[in-house]
Amino acid sequence: MVVAGIPQTAGLAYALIAVPIVALFWYKGKMTRIVAFLFLIMSLCLGFLIFSPMAPYQLQMAMIGSGPVPGNPLPFVIGLVVIFMALTFVAGRIFCAQLCPIGAVQELFYTNPDQTTNAAQKKIIMVIRLTFFIAMLAAGLLISVALLRFFGIKEFFYLDFNAPSFTIFVILIAVSLFFYRPFCRLFCPFGALLSLAAAKSLFKIRRTAACIKCGTCEQVCPTAEAGQFDAKMECYLCGRCTRACPAKGALLYSRKKRQSDNEDYR
Ligand code: SF4
Ligand code: SF4
Image 1 (cartoon, rainbow, N blue to C red):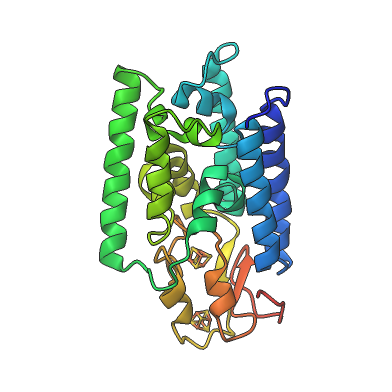
Image 2: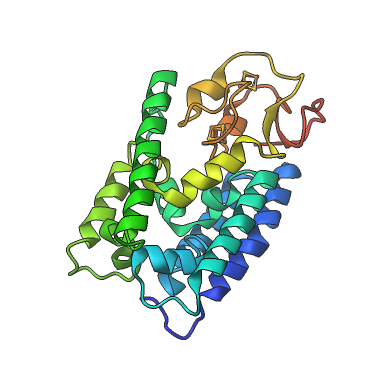
């Protein structure tokens, strides 16, 4: 399915251009369910058409063992990771939210409105993620960086049904039917790095004075990040909280806490 003639850099360009566009949709209160769906579909299509943009593609190629990385990959990898971390520091995890095809496929498959995460589960997930990240880092340094190949991500997007690892990512997608974004929240090393930047991101979903403290946003958030003082490290800008909030303008994607200006965030 992947079209060899289209350069993977097109995916990287898409990601770099789309981050500010998606942020602008959020800031203007225009990130409706339909707009989010269109971005998810576009990102998913790019995954199948050019196998990008999962991460800066040089990093992805190295980690998935997707063939020789052009030139010396290290400056590319470090440079692009820094750029995406900087974008996340400004705008939150927009790349993970709507632009990464792996995130998109899990977001589209997740259909369980009752699955939420409590504080204890959130801690356990963080511990698993950290443990896995450290193990990946150690294995990457000591053995090979091409560790993500075992997840069958490449085989999935290449529709390589005969590869044994194809089923591993299919299983992860099946799990995402009832557990929100298992790959993003437990295994993705790029996501782990971006979550650090997201903790201090300038723009994120914040409550305004219009909040009536009903707790609905916290009840619908699949990652336990909708609390007033949650850092939004694991906020995937899914919009469940903004859609469910009964007080108009109580949740705004903004730089700092601002008064409700009655923008429509549904
Ligand atoms: S759902 Fe809206 S009104 Fe209710 S606590 Fe959350 S932000 Fe406040
Ligand atoms: S429900 Fe709100 S706080 Fe929770 S992940 Fe989705 S957008 Fe972020």
